[in-house]
Image 1 (cartoon, rainbow, N blue to C red):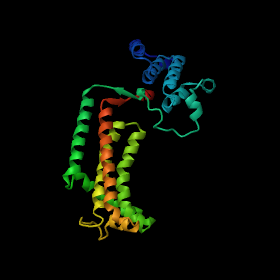
Image 2 (cartoon, helix red, strand yellow):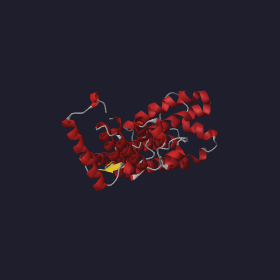
Image 3 (spheres, rainbow, N blue to C red):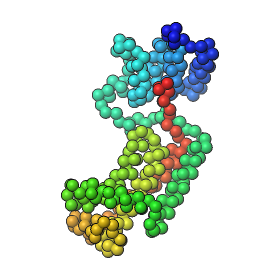
Image 4 (cartoon, one colour):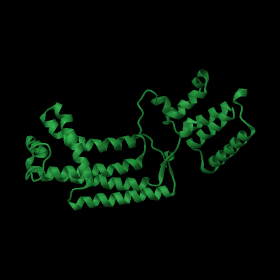
Length: 282
């Protein structure tokens, strides 16, 4: 550390207190990547680069899938030092393979916390479950059905370039794809609670589609944007119009299963928060 980067005695004292707290945390709770990353940042502020390298190496062994730790280690090492580091086997094997966000989701990735936020999340899940399962038996038009309808109608022109059949199926495709895309985004970023909440919407979308599919023979539902009934057209072209009730039942049951899974996942993840490794940005 150069003279211009020297820290004050007061700041040094604060850093030493933080260092002691982190060491106590590691001693009482066991090793964790988050604590080791924070410890590395303390060492860097104190000008102890080698000690910071050691802490980051330990963090990397604990969380080899966390690319931000590896990046931080590269940042503080010289090329020669980095070349001689003993990297975890998982990194050596997977350096040329795409990262799989679902691989090795470990207990350390999430921290259990009985705070007010956890109870609030649990309440949100319970209310959502009650509402969506109530919609299941209510048989009326609901708020999300309006959103589903708008998304559904957008799907037809989006997929019309792929032919009449795909264009007709495009409404249902996009209606299912939009909530599924949000779920995948939250799952890839390991925000499992958020993914669970959006799963209720996906389940409801399946229920909405099942009502439309069940109407394929009688065609009593009011239509928007034309006189062609999507599911009558689709099932007729597939020569399965006689199996309308079976197909609609499968779609409906799929929605129920998704909403049940959303309830379970939401309740499980209510009190778990993703471990914070944002200390790497300090």
